[in-house]
Length: 256
Image 1 (cartoon, one colour):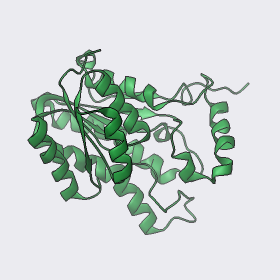
Image 2: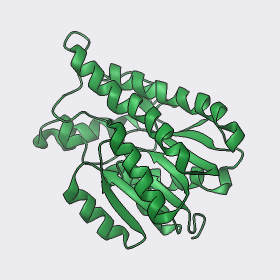
Image 3: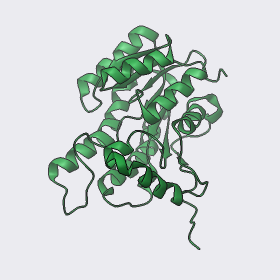
Image 4: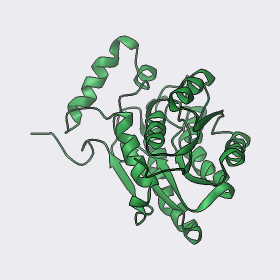
């Protein structure tokens, strides 16, 4: 289990959910580095579980000064960075997803800032600290490929993230830096508690399970395994592409 032995990684939003699943998989494959997040308590708990090979840095990926601090601090501690997982994103705290009839300009801006702008500038701010031949993994979403109620802006942002992997790979060819997208489907994380009242969570999860051909929701560990592949030399011939890890939900129909 050493496909990432001594590789330095930065995982934004690595303090919970998919991000922590990726951080844990990286640790198990020998990686070292940094997880980031905005909640100090969950950062402390997560880095304690990961052990001494990872550090936690509190920061907001929508703020340029925080991004610069994250990468400089990581470099000062570990040296040049081999992998960046651009995972932070999702639901804006205190601002529910909504239909176009209810979305305000502020709602639009905040969702785009968190899910698209921050992804672009996370990559940009990382560049001075990256090794030649580094791997950048953007976290997309199956929402980029299929519409769902209230998720129009989020889906559009994630579709743009999928496109970013292509353009950024072209921009970075001279440094042999690969950029790819890992797009999860419905993953069993605490995010459901932000979307619906607690008493409705299990019912909503069951709705999603019924849509997934493999018959279960994804786990953060599933995303971790796919991310390890994209970060390792096993994927050295994969550039500017997308791995859609959604249990077949997008490409296989269960309709009879």
